Image (cartoon, rainbow, N blue to C red; front, side, top):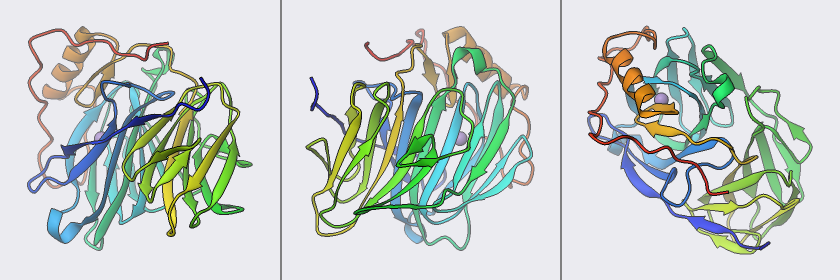
Length: 303
Ligand code: MN
């Protein structure tokens, strides 16, 4: 079992807000919960902000995870309860560590005309999920390969190493492939990988992936082969990490290990504890949805 790449397709999810921008979600889904510690992959745009209204996500909480914002175009203003105030710009990583509890807002700026990017979550391992809030910014220098340009925002690829700290080994990189280009990337065989295609059709180890699809490659490979099957540049985001050996309970913006922990997190948000306050946002915090009447199911990946 060497060449098999599993193709995960996206479903449309409304992001919320008055006019409700749509995002395409490829993780989690029934067939797969995690790729390494990556547990959430939302892909959006190119979105004409004049039509969709752009992004305006009111204060909302997170626990047990890190958020990664990565843009291809546009600009998002980030504020959080750590006191961070940052602009998310194309080619620049913004990694927020929620730890035990953080809240934040994300608003596309008035000068943004086209919004296009990904929003990703990383599950924190049990030993670190009560860590403190943190916010890191990093703008990787692009690396030129024969036929491609790579920006490594987390981990290591093609000789480029990100200095950004993570709690489990991770890979996160943007790849732009020239028309009809073919590249071979050396990767860690202990890692599983996911390739999200943003533009063009990219063949991962021979399997074609259309725009918006996420190709999954199991551990055991020491190289990945990528081919741009089109006459235009192609773009993709490569994610990786060793299989996350824990089951998680995901609900709304929380990652926990049990229904009881989720119930407590919801109560803490509703009653104004634990997650801090975001300064400088004009609007009310997001209310938590109602919990289902049945216990939430812990989810992991079959190993
Ligand atoms: Mn968020």
